[in-house]
Image (cartoon, rainbow, N blue to C red; front, side):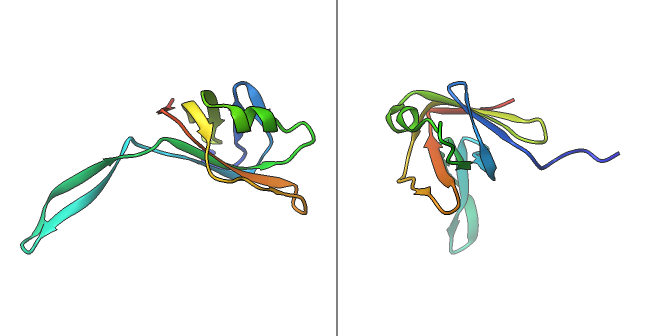
Length: 119
């Protein structure tokens, strides 16, 4: 029997569900690592703190919560992936310069936060 590992995802911002168009990304892990090298090869690793984030493409519905998203600085973003995993981004705020695309009826959103937790 096959297990569902991809497909429909759901995103809520402070309890209000957005219409996800299909693209959803959530960070995994608190740090990024890279090799530290010398002339003799790899001598260790360097860890850098990673900013917890959620990125998605949403449908720009008539009731889209523009004010909430543009003014919110302590939101909770809950993302439910098709495989059953749930990512909660707390202390969230919108970053970048989102632009509504009238021809496609969509908007790309990116949120950073203070903590990202997987369940």
